[in-house]
Amino acid sequence: MRKHSVKNTRVNGEVQKVLAEIIRGEIKDPRISPWTSVVAVEVAPDLKTCKAWISVLGDSEAAAATLQGLKSAEGFIRRQLARTLNLRNTPVITFVLDQSIEYGVNMSHKIAEVMAKDSAAADEPDEDFETDEDFDDEDFDDEDFDGEDFDDDEE
Image (tube, rainbow, N blue to C red):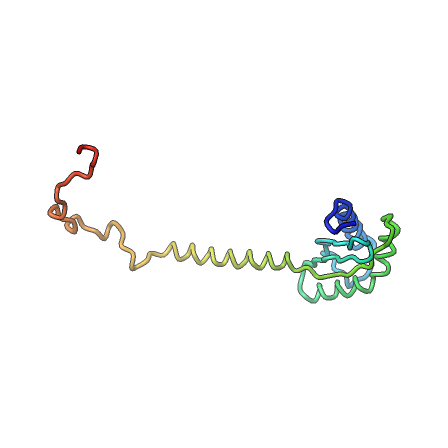
C-alpha cells in the first residue's frame, strides 16, 4: 500500500475517527483533558506504526498531562482500536502534541493587535500631512498656467 493511496487515506480517516471516540468516551484517566481532539492521523503503509497528532485546549501543563495519560493508556487504546477496526495489523500509536491551533490563535491575536494600532493611527490626524483646508487659493497663480490647451486631438 502506498503512502498517499486511496486505501491509506481511508484507513487514516477511520483510525482518526475511532481514536477520537476512544479518547472521548472510553478512557477514564483524569490526566486526559476533556478538551482533547485528534487533529490528524498518519498510518504507515505497512500498518505497523501510526502517528496521531493531538490538540489540547488549555495551558501547557494540561497538554503535558494529557500526553502522559495517553502514553500510559496506549495499550488499552490499541486493544480497543483492534476490536473496532478489522485491520491485518493493529498499529503501534505514537502521540504527538499538535500546536497548530494554538499557533493560529496566537497569530490571530497578533493580527488583531496590529489592526487596532493601525486603526488608532489612522484616527489621529498626522501633523505632517496637509489637508485641503491648509491650501489657499492664493497659493496658485494664474501666471503659472501658460494658457495652452491640453487636448492633443485638435491638431
